[in-house]
Amino acid sequence: MDRPLVSIIIPTFNRAHLIGETLDSIIAQNYPHWECIIVDDGSTDGTNQLLATYCKQDSRIQYHHRPKDRPKGGNTCRNYGFELSKGEYVNWFDSDDLYLPDAINTISSAFETGIDVVISPMARFDGETKQYLGINTIEKELLIPAYLVGDVAFYTDGPTWKRSFLEQQELLFDEALPIIQDWDFNLRMLYQNPNLVFLKEAQIQYRVHHQSLQKELAKLNLNMIASDFRTRYKHLELLANYYPGGVPVLKQFILERRKHFVKLAFSRNDVSKMSLVKDLMRTQKENQDYKGVIKTYLGLWSYRWFGKGYWFFR
Image (cartoon, rainbow, N blue to C red; front, side):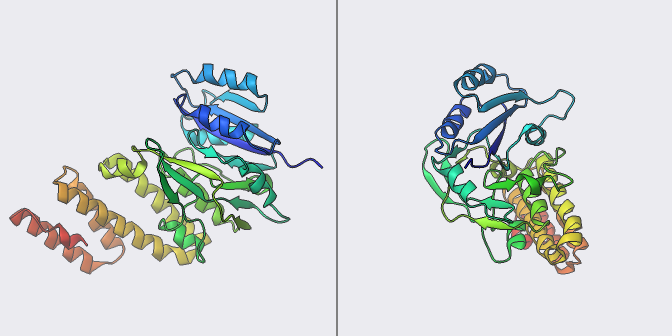
């Protein structure tokens, strides 16, 4: 009996130095019934030539370009790839990560009647040293609250979705989001109460880059920080409709995240510090955290007079 077709959808942009290793890990799968749909977001580094070679090598690999009339970005490529795909199961994959040899067989075998998504942990490794960095946590009893605050993370690659579940959703990847797209997407899918299966052993190797999002945020890029918070505030509204119990959890997380950036900015005497402290005070007032407002004022006063005092922002 034929096994179901699995669609692997990969957005890429200037990853010619990495995507070959990713494709090699797909070709090496002991499960043969897959299609790999690569959508290029406008690469200029020789990806075209490399992918032409892989498409000749294996007809299951397809290479497409993002339509010019659609917004630039990985999310557009993911959505477009889904439109082109035909598989009963769908796994969005990144162009620098790797499957273990039995990954697709293990994942597809875990789908039973009524299952909407199979989620694999990922073995994280340093992209430069190849050092093993541990496995991400994917399962907790109160899943949505844990995902809201980062105690649980699937990333983009971890879940493999049943196509029929995805086709019922109004929106897949939000093409307006520049960052934390996987956090947004996975939460919106969880709000729909899918039937989940969690695998115990990692089937995917996740490459950790030195220029990761968290490291970029740590540079106190105000535009990136603002994008991060816009997405989180969007979920406050969604939670009110789908999971009201998550609202106070996310509100507190946003508040603590505001404090984190303020403390970082003041400890470095960064030019962003006053802008960030204004955002913190606005959030404290929204949360009716008047004790926090007072502590923030005291911290500002202490900093202006003595050049220190950012511990008040704790």
